[in-house]
Length: 499
Image 1 (cartoon, one colour):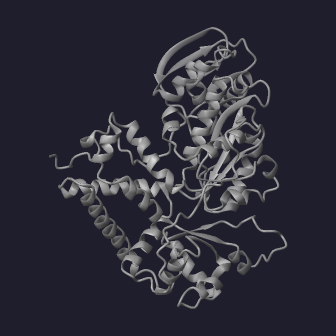
Image 2 (cartoon, helix red, strand yellow; image 1 turned 180 degrees about the vertical axis):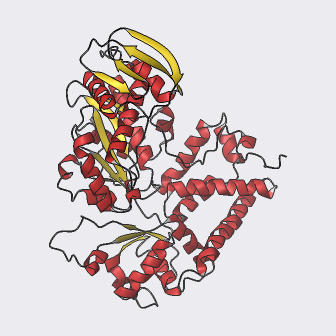
Image 3 (cartoon, rainbow, N blue to C red; image 1 turned 135 degrees about the horizontal axis):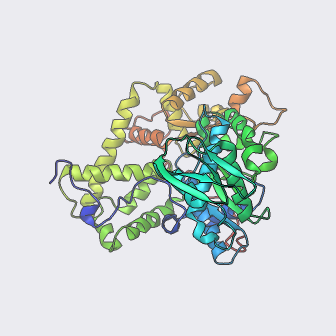
């Protein structure tokens, strides 16, 4: 065996790691692997068909918002090809993120370059449109090659765009070329943007007949709702009313809800879609879909897989229904099995090995943090994970914590303990900026009382270790604490009259 060890998946007949926690793409594979999201996919698809309105998704980190949007956009594109809708919606091949110190102009440049890449990739589906007059091959070369053609063109049409240090290119006319190293920073901003806009207008002549679906992902990385709001307000007139673009905002920790308080954005936003965690009952079908995709004999692979699928469903509940963390931990366990060097022969020994690993993995995480968290703060976590709150609670509920704990909670100390848990990544806070009524108390105490907290997968894992060691004595024994925390919204529209 190599000193780097065996691939735990190749040895049992898998062509890829089924537990890689990456977003699914806007393609056939993503469609096959997205399990347990049919209603949400239909809902997002309907929102994407609303011209002039931005589709907004909010949900916990790792819940699968990006995968959901990608598959919904792919579904919309397939619906157009099948004649089910007149709107041509094309998934962008690039997703976009706002940077805390990024400039508006730079972000706009990234968007128009990403849109150009998308139209180039999908040009075989655009043959019925008059796009031959646009120099897509030259744009593709500049965007994707270190060597570009130096073009000298005689203009015959009404617009030109420039490539600093490289070329001045017209849409029509005689062209002479020579190769040179691409050392330019890019097309001149105004020229390139004008070209992409005209290309979009050519394809999406009438407003409302479709567009490129552009996703601004991880908006919570701007750290607070006010920062996100200011950046997006600055982008409103530059990007959000461009014909041929359909926008999606994705964020966590309530940051998307805070955007609704912006007078400049409110008219542009669809109601926020709260993306709930996948139901625990979908975990086994979800993993089986991956085994089917990456093997020729999924049933045999399932028997040989180091972890039983039933244990993955249990683990999903333990990590507070966080799919991304579940996949990462499943991969961690499979690596652990390879390192142990002894193959698992029976289902009983496989389960025993999983339980030993789980106790050690959660115990190690707890030990790393135990000296950095006060006993009173641990008591907050214990009560938060009880069946009373099931992992999610409001800051105003500290009186309920009092009633269900041996530790006394008052607002000042409660706030301090919550801050301690949040800094260590054991709980996360949803933003309350812009979500309260103007008549509500706007003092620091009033703002704090509107905060909503959720125990993270990390917090749930260390709580599991505390339970195993019976250290959660601040709350009554609660054997049902691993019940599912978040549920899919059953009020979402059914799959009839999709678009």
